[in-house]
Length: 105
Image (cartoon, rainbow, N blue to C red; front, top):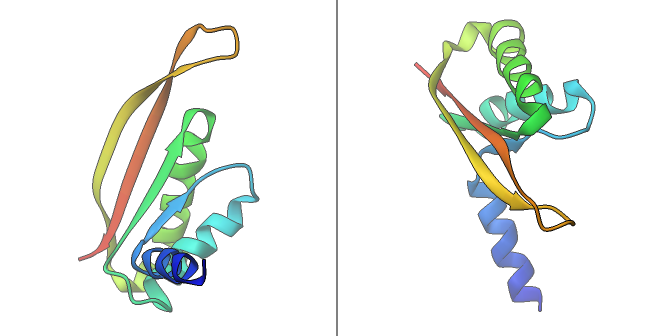
């Protein structure tokens, strides 16, 4: 069982994604900034779905303009899409998704 934990921790260290959800806004901004500064990432992907898409855009802009302004961090790519889910009643619903890729220039 310990081997599984080590493997998942190694995967987390390599992954430079920040998933936006219901936590306070600055937690996500801090996560993005730490990826670039402390962990030395060249790219960070901000991922969001549904009602959190606008928060993801705000996180990307605040991190880039306020906290990483001296590091030439730019928006490299934006991917949009949708995922189909089946709710409790069996009805299919679509949820919008967005990925914002920030990278050093």
